[in-house]
Length: 354
Ligand code: NAD
Image (cartoon, rainbow, N blue to C red):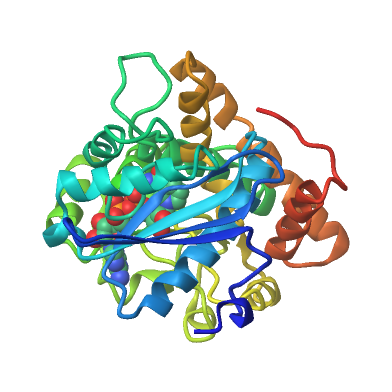
């Protein structure tokens, strides 16, 4: 594998491969940039088909974290860890403790938290081996804990901003929103949207998760293979990455795409296709920064939940700045957000600290 020649390689500072024979841990930590602070980003556990797939994911996700952290105004660079394995079968506390030792060996250059396939309980195991971990349990009113609900809050506020910008509407009453994936983030997002009077259409590969949001929030279930093409005001991808691609974009009938999933665009040029189709795309790492904002307050210690919520309330203004600049320059929103992030990373733009 020619790592330095991979399309996903973007001048990353460090790539570490970790193995622990006793627990069968196979992990990769990628640090994209520490220009703005220690590299922060979650740990994903996924049954990657090949090591190359895992490396590419770590490279892509860690660059995304550099951009996300820069635009969120948190004092962190970008990093990400992946553990190769099926989270429902291969998980043990010892495996996460071994992962914690790997994180600790980097001396604080990388800070971890939960992501897809890992939980608050797993991070508690990591914390037995390192202090460079967040997303742990917390007392009521303290910053921290599961970042999912905080990510959902940021996405909800971002949807409101997108609706104001694209539809000129001040509220969500009666608007239709399709949510793909009603897990940790999607479930909480549905609750917020239903509370604001939106009509929900939801899809998930887990029937029980769909049933729950239908019962609790009056959502209507739609087939997994149809949800992206629903004729709705807003489509909120909250499951997997790369769902906006050359196959799906011609079928989209939403006017706004604003969801939590990381790396929603399969390729940068898909942003152009969305712009050409007149669909307003809220760049994923701008709208889904609520979780890292919570992690940031937790890592610095002494923060309160109230401060986290106040920081998250900055997301709509940042998104609107991206939307306005994209309209002014007639460019795709993802290209504008990438440029704003790169300007922060290279010091050409002043950093805003949350
Ligand atoms: P999760 O694993 O709890 O939920 C994802 C849900 O998507 C699950 O219920 C799963 O069954 C469903 N799903 C999987 N494949 C699907 C498909 N093909 N169609 C429909 N549903 C499908 O994860 P989460 O924490 O809710 O995160 C959701 C997305 O948001 C992920 O892309 C994640 O990277 C991103 N994200 C999460 C956070 C956070 O704080 N948790 C922060 C930023 C970004």
